[in-house]
Image (cartoon, rainbow, N blue to C red):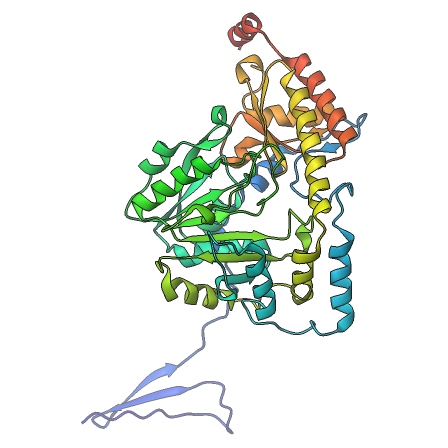
Length: 455
C-alpha cells in the first residue's frame, strides 16, 4: 500500500520552503522546493460594469463643444426642476422633513421595504376602488430609478427580453443591458401625439418576453395617453400574457385639458408593477424617495414576485429614513394649490415654447400634454449641412449657447428634446436664439439640392 510523507526541512517552526518527500512503497522521491507563485496585480472591471452603458452620457460627453462666449448658456437639457430655483417645493414639504429630523427618531435603519407606517401612507394615497392597495402592496425604494431597477430585476432573467418605448427614457436600456436582458424597442407615433404603435408592439412579443414597460406621462415626449389607448395597451398585454412595468413618476403632472389615468385602475387581469416617487410632482429629485405599487388582483404574481422584491430590497437597506418619516405628511398635507401652480407654470412654458418653435421653418414641435418636456422634429432635408440631430444640437450650442438634448439619446434620431421647467424669460430667449440659428442654416428645397450636389 502506498504511503505519503511530507517532510518539512528548515530551522524552527517557520521554514521558508517545503521540501516535499513522497514515499511510495518505501521508495523516497523528492519533488524539490515548492515555491509560491509570484504575486501579480490583476484587477479587472466586472462584466456587469462593462455591459452598463448610458446613451445620454455617451452622446453628450462625446459632443465636446464650447458655447458661444458672447452669449450666456441656456441649458434646456436636464430634467431636474430644481436647477433654476423657479420651481421650489412647498413649504409644508420642507417643514415636514425639518420636524422629523428634529425628533431624532429616524436616524437608524428601517426595514428594507420601508417603515410599515410609511407604506400604509403611500397605499392610502393611491388606493381607489378600481385599484385597491394595502401596505403589503408597497415597496419603498431609493428613488424611482431604483424602483425600476428592482422591478426589472424581479421580472426578467438574463437572456429574456423586455419591450421598451422608442423614444424612451434611457435608463431602461442601461439597466437591462447591465443585467444581460435584451431590449426590444417599440415605436411611438409623433403624428398621434406619441401613442404606441400597437401592431408593432405586439409583433415584438415572443416566448422570452418578460415584461412591457409603459411610461405615461412620458419622458421625453411630454405625452399623456388617453383612457381608450391605455385600454388597448392592456388588451395586448392580456392577449400575450405579459406583465407591465408602469413608469408613472410623472403621474398627475398633466395639463388642465387632459386627464391622467393610472394604468392599474383600468386593468382587471394584467399584473402591474407601478413605479413612482416624490422626485417630479413634489420637485425634490435629490431626496431619493420612490416606490413600487404591486397591482395583482388575479394573484398572477402571487408570492413569487412579492418575495422576490423583498429579497432584492435587502441588497440595500431601503430609502432615506428622514424622508420616510415625513412621507405621510408630504402626501396628505401638501396643499392642492402647490400642484396647481406648478402645472400652470409648466403649461404656460409649454404653450410659449410650442408656439415659438412652430413658427420656425424646418422645425415641427409635438405639443405636450404633461410632464416636463417637449419633442421637436428637425426636418433634416432643410438643414443639409448637418449629418444628424447630434450635429444640429452641437452647432446650436457653439453658435447660440442653447443646449437641447439630441433625441438620439432616446433612440429617436432627427428630433431634440426641450425641458420646459426653466424660467419663462429663459424659454423665450432660447426660442429666439433657436429661430436665429435655424434662419441662418435653413435651406429651401432648391438650396438643399444645390448643397447636396456640392457635397
